[in-house]
Each structure stands twice: as structure tokens, then as C-alpha cells.
Length: 384
Ligand code: MG
Image (cartoon, rainbow, N blue to C red; front, top):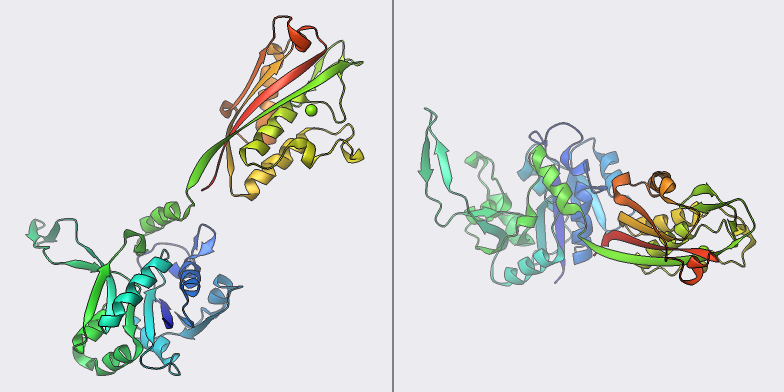
């Protein structure tokens, strides 16, 4: 079904506390109004009319930069006048077209809400989402005590509200001058004897009114995360030298480690663990030994690269656990320095970093001191 939308973003935001007015505040990095405009555009609204206060032209351009299919018009002194300014911008549109009227302060509107409203509009002049009142309602009397008010049949009206454009135009034209301010658009259609139906509302259509609403919305705006685990293993052979580098720390020894880079098996295992957690190949794929750029390289570069790949997907590292396996050098005196180095490389608190050392009791290649090995685990959270 074809439909257009009017988003009212001209209100004073007088209860929302300090800072920019509500439509221009950021929610998870996007302006509040942008959430609704993007959702309604992607649900098929054409056009989306954003009604703004005089002087907010730069704010709306900044908030909606890069989006097509919206226009901004100046609103009036009241919400009702602003809605009518939005409707005036749709004067070329036919009366039987559906229009959604939406408050910019309800950022979590989604296509499912739009579909429910439009399909119910076939049998009414208007349809609104509404939630039954769950809390007991009280009226405070002048003496400061309370009286319980009946809540049977009461519904909390939300937006977007859907109307036939002609029905809403006629209803606004018929609204008596002395009738005061309507508190929503459905009231205007009701007064004109229009039939307004209900579809189930949604707590996600919450209205941002008070400062604490923004804190809750910020939590709701975060994508849901899933936990993933990756593991890595690496081994390097001992060769000539006077020390080994493990987890970014140089440890004196009567041998060195051979390898194309600095041969830091701890960081290599950890890099593979991070890449493994996000299913992003392995260290050899990202940093081929055939590439002369990585000759003698500080393996911290590899680990940082893997961390950036995680961050680029919106993920974050939770904790890492490294086990180093060798007979010599003795690693326990260096464990704390290694944790401290990893804390810097991984931007993690040190209590989320574990470095352990063990031997294989003289068995196998590490037991014969032909080389050393490292195992690592990384736990990450990424958007679901
Ligand atoms: Mg290696």
C-alpha cells in the first residue's frame, strides 16, 4: 500500500533535561529523528515529511544527511499546527492515500508496526497502536493522599498513527477553534465522528520524554551481542641468539627463536585466537611469510590488526588466556610483564588477561628444547 508519513520534530523538549532538543540528540550515534526517518523510508513511506521548528534547518540537514526521500517543513506553535503544516506539504497527494503521523521522540518504530497499522486501516478512518494500562492508576488529592482511579478499558495511545489522508484533512478542518489542543491526531478524527481502530501497541514505541528515558533508550539501541570463542596454537624453533620474545616481552636466554617475524609464538597464537573467534582466516593469510614487510616484524602489529578486524565488526574482546609451553627459559618471573604488555596491546584491564606457563616434563619437541609452543583462547562479543 502506498503511504506517506509526517514526523513531528518541532516540540520544545521542555521535560528532557539539558542538551540539544530531542530530535537532534544522538542515540547509539544516530540522531533520534533519524531512527524514525530511516525506519519509515525503509518501510516504503513516500515522501517522509519532517516538521521542524524555525531555525532547525541545519540540525535536520545534519541529522538526516545522506538519506533521500524526505523533506523538511516548518511547524507551528502547537503540535496540531505542526501536523497540519506537514499535511499541507502533502497537498498533491490524493485523499485516499494513507498517511502515518509519528512523533520524532519515538525512535524505535519498525516496519512491523507500519504493516500492522496499514492492514487495519482498510476498515477504519484511522488506526492507532495502543497498550493497555498495566499499572494501578492513582490520583493525588490536594491533601497529598491518593485515590485509586479505575483503569478498566483504558489504553495508552502511541504513534505512528495511520489515517486516510482525506479523513485527517477533513477532521482537522472541522476541529472547533474553542475546543482547545488535541493531544493526538486520533482525537481529531474521533471528534469528527471518524472511526479509529486499535492495533496492539509495543513497549518499543516508547516516547523519550524525561532524561531517564534517554538512558533506557541508549540500552535498547545497542545491538544484541553473542559470545564467541577462538583458539590459536603456534610453535617456533630455537636457534642462535641471546633471548626470546614472548607476548611482547624480551626474555634473556641462551638461544633465540627462528621465524620470519620476531617469532613471538605467544602473540601469534593469540592473533589466531582473535581471528578464529570472528571466523576471519589465520595469521598466515593476513601476514604471509613471503611478504618482506613482515621480516623481523614486531608481532604486536599482527595482534593489533586482528583486534581492529574485531572492532570493525562492532565486536569487543572480553578476555584472553595464553599458555606458553617450554622447559627453558623459566617464564614465571615474566608473566606479569607479559600481562601488562598484552593489556596495552589489547586495551583490556589486566584482570581479563591470563598468561600461564607450563612444561611437557621433558617429553616431545618442547621437552627436548628444540623449540617452544603457545596456545591461546580469546572470548569476544559480536553483534548477533
Ligand atoms: Mg608463528
